[in-house]
Image (cartoon, rainbow, N blue to C red; front, side, top):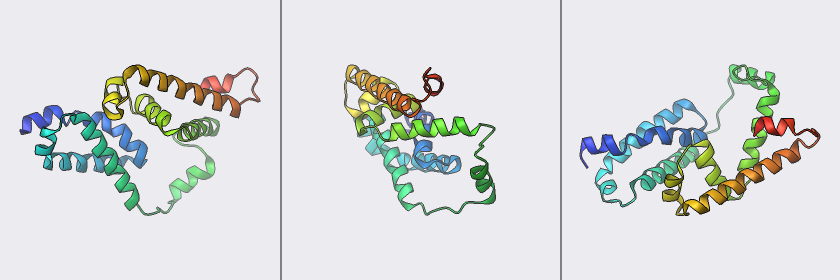
Length: 177
């Protein structure tokens, strides 16, 4: 693989990999560093990558594995004063605590989904991958992916409505979803 081919085939993946890495690492600086290191690793394996029949799946799998490796190495962080202030006041970037709480509950509901549903809803709705890209990564057919995604979204909706069932109008659940 030449430098030009690498620039045209691999570098554009960084735009799609960033949200996935950020979701795993939960730190912007670490995500940027990881993405840069990942591109370097892919460059060093360019011959292996060139022989690969499904390059996008290889790149995404490598990125996911690398980010999980980084998490394993990561030590517990101490909370600085600014973070402690945010935690005590429950406000982040001008967002009220109710909104933060609702989004955290939705994230938890997604996290508690069966792996197949969680993976597809995260790849499609959070990471923004197309159905064809998800098909390459998971091996499921597009029609099957649409069914899985629909069921995952329905399950999230049902669970969120259970959490906020005191609101008979469903206003809070609709705001979140």
